Length: 327
Image (cartoon, rainbow, N blue to C red; front, side, top):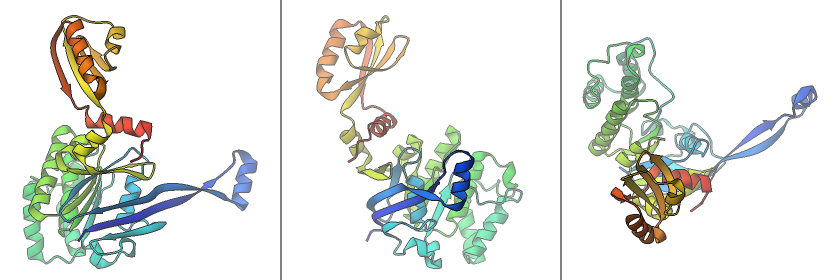
């Protein structure tokens, strides 16, 4: 049975509209008019236990609003949603024991206290016996390499260490479902890699279901076989990550290392120019023209090296959002 069921989920926000100037302010004070903003529109999907699913979309697409409805922080305007068998917005204690939400821009740890003090508070909130608390604390802190950091004030931890401590706090009660909203936001490359490795190990060890939003495509490609793509509140794609490339990438990227520079006019005859860095050129060529373009490049240019690849996934998704194509 699916652990997350979303059926025609929608959220509309009324936003007050005020005319400029004093007259508009007075009119707004006595009689307000509103326009309706559709943040999420008729979104449907299911997620099975133990899946790690990426949730992609540009800023304002509806990702965080959807996560807030799935965690019960926001009441949906329409549709149906169940998480771990519960209706989220009812906020039943049994439901709260089954899920956790981590937002990269927010923190739950007390700034001036050691992280361990906040973790003990979390343990008490979830009624964890002392023996269970100590066992889970030991397991998670070892997985996160935080054993020596928990007695330091949170403000003295690095950004990466604080993110790890936030994850530890969110996972003490061993939730079945973990919602992650930009968990690696602002972290350096090494900290991002450490968080990704922890999430992969945690999923494999405890079979937790994870729904992950991130602007870092390395997070998605490292953790998620399946992705959901949302744009302007509409679900555009639901399927495997490789399928996203096949479905929305009718082009191939051609990288050329030239023996000597060539004019942009000539390069454009082979495909769209992505970048030119000295004698290294990146082109995007429609798949149906790929064979003829490669033949022309080889015969007409003096090249040192040539390779053909899928375009980077972030470029595919960026072009998809720009065109507004809906599945």
